[in-house]
Image 1 (cartoon, rainbow, N blue to C red):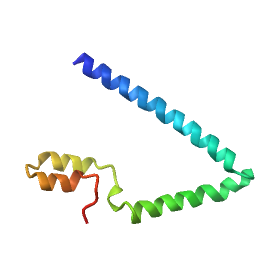
Image 2 (image 1 turned 180 degrees about the vertical axis):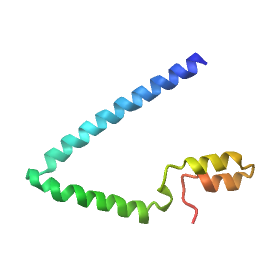
Image 3 (image 1 turned 45 degrees about the horizontal axis):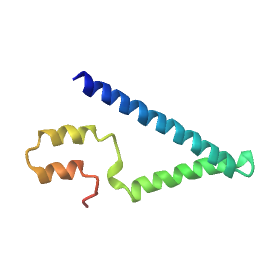
Image 4 (image 1 turned 90 degrees about the vertical axis):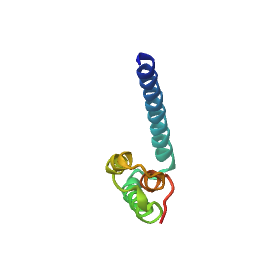
Length: 92
């Protein structure tokens, strides 16, 4: 049990370091691409609007945390019904 918990903690640490590195790279790229610092006042809200649109139109099943769906799927015994709740692919 300690090995599993230690391995999980190590994996979380490695993924966290990876996310921090990726965030630093994204920030550096953002700074590099900006021609003028005030341009960020237009680019940032525009980027948010594009992400919000993509979330609603391209990824309609991505709303919420997914915790209620996971709890409901745990209680189901029918695999096709469980897959409809937890599938990575949208089944419209």
